[in-house]
Image: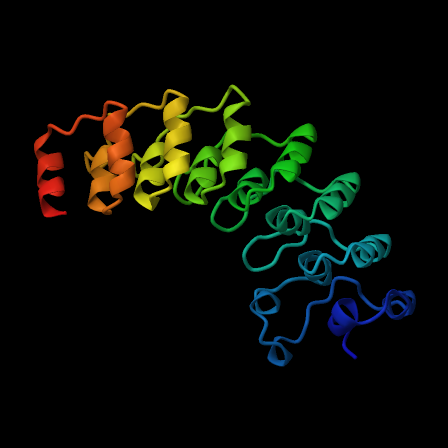
Length: 247
């Protein structure tokens, strides 16, 4: 059985015996033998054990000197992977082994961003205690942590982030979009409602000169349109009239 198979399907004793014989811990699998997309992306044994939430296997691989900062083809490290899935015990273990929490994946998402995307509030809290930051933007599109929560419709995460006090609720990404615009486009009513309750700006325009109301109308998100209008969004501009007429 190949080492990669031992890590995923074998016992701890088998993996320990394999490594005790001097075999390399950071070897990668023969890609021709696997059709799993993550194996194909170049996961190391440590990243793969992390992805499958095999805490004891992760411990064993670290004891044998696995490279904690090794990445796959998507620039994902073991701790980025653990944060994405919200495997808080593995995150804690990797932190104890001084994993770098400041690396980003191939599209520029920070570790807090990947945890936020899936609503892992406790994981984010743990990362913040160890020095992770809520500031900064995604290298790919300029989205903030708040925008990731809004896009993914993660209400509890959004509530947590808004309570932190130093989040710029009106920040704009590279397309000029705010968190409100992103939520309005997706039709995430509760997200829009929560942003409005926290004094988000209604009339900011994106790079195409559209407000959140225009975007919601363009996507046919009628309930969000009504909500924005109830909170004072301006429906009088020419672009808005055209969009509403076309619905």
